[in-house]
Length: 162
Image (cartoon, rainbow, N blue to C red; front, side, top):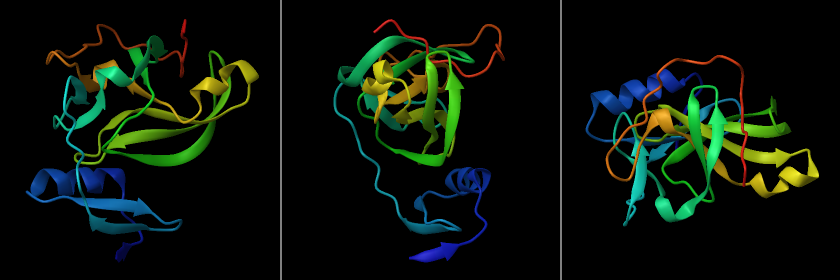
């Protein structure tokens, strides 16, 4: 492994756009380590990154389509692939305090959503280990993209009716 102490998300994105090969960057505390990237190719109807079309999740793995993010609709998934996680942080959401990590496309480095690491409220524990993809950041299974009509900056949200 090669260690790079000051690699940022924008640098990863730049590398992915400039070259025909890709590398995985693994957070090892104070630095990111570079390794070979293997993309998971999903078979069946799936959601993919809006920017580079990399597969992110299968339609069969949707848990709820009634989540909200600061930019509009968001879907909760039991499993996502081809993403890497940012730093853990506690975030107050509409359903209470959660420990989450933002998730990014491994191929282009674009932000695509977040993953629930821990839910402080007992009735929110079902979210732990699951990921939310923001619809404005992904292509749908039929090739459509959810466009944000007006950006809302009301803060993070995770409202759901599941």
